[in-house]
Amino acid sequence: MPPTGLPFDDIRALFAIMPPPSQDCVDLVRERDAALVKPAGALGRMEELPQWMAAWQGKSRPTMNRPLVAIFAANHGVVAQGVSAWPPAVTRQMMETFAAGGGAINQICATYDLGLKVFDLALDVPTGDITQGPALDEKGAAATFAFGMESIAGEIDLLCVGEMGVGNTTIAAAIYHALYGGQAAHWVGRGAGIDDAGLARKIDAVERAVALHRNHLSDPLELMRRLGGREIWAIAGAIMAGRIERVPVILDGYVATAAAAVLHAIDPASIDHCLAAHCSAEGAHADVLARIGKKPLLDLGMKLGEGSGAAMAAGVLKAALACNLDMATFEQAKVG
Image (tube, rainbow, N blue to C red):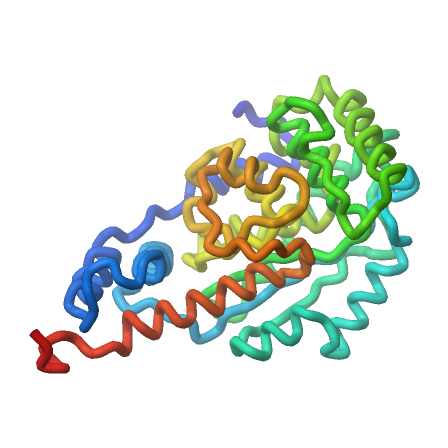
């Protein structure tokens, strides 16, 4: 991709310094799994998860001592097109609910002993209405990407990325429609419960937005600048920081995956350190996951967002690590 001489150049440069997985660590984890007191393959994907952690942490004994669920919250100008059943004020109200410990994500994090941080991405300044113009300028987009990169500070060893933002399923659908083509209706779901008339408005908004920006969509970063919200940019930055700092990443649902899809469009290897938590019931999430080569860990019919699916997957990962690290071997148990 040719450089533009603009702030996106710093982002493009990061793709050249992504560390590879550690095959030596994977091999050591696999060897230990083969010695554990169970039939080979008996734990299914739970046997693969510690290997994935080892590959990207670069540790033969992967850790989950400081897992973090990061929720990035933003508001969107496209809500003016009647694409949501809820007003933008709900985004801040949900932020306050999380702060008070009342959200679903709070309960899941408490259950699995996961850290939780919620990031306010200028909620009082919605992005531009994508049916009328770009969502962000390049400087603002790059700054939000950098903010997302900083979210992994604190020596965390697992990052779960989630989001909160009224109207952001419209944003995600527009990104997918621009990336993959087809009919806009294929990518658009009912979000947080819009009726048939609202769904028609939502499809129309996605169609108009992608048509408006159609001459500027060949560069994935420019596509994301024009169609993506601040939470999408911040999640993309967090994913990239995770790769560079050797922090494995669990992707939440339909909206969070949009950030990964843009990075994948730039370089498919850039999201190798990411695990798809679940298949959302929203939109065509299953189609997106297939296109970016991710097999979801869970399929619970969830579409809440707010990192809830990623946090549930982290609970499975925690159990998988415990099995690999703490189960007895055949020799220790004197079995066989």
